[in-house]
Length: 84
Image (cartoon, rainbow, N blue to C red; front, side, top):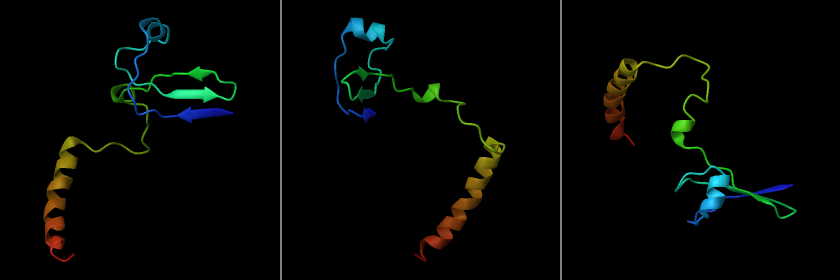
């Protein structure tokens, strides 16, 4: 069994440990502790490292299509605003 703990605190990881784990300064890590007491500190991926990791089932709208949809939605939302 593996325990997964999210620590929302700052900790200083010694340079030798950081180098062994291939962590950069101020990089976030998660803490995984097993029942035998061993701990693993895998790095939490940065947002830009996740780019392209999710495949969509349909084509992505172009920027022009997104802007057009937003322009059309604004007046519709404004017209229903007073009815709430």
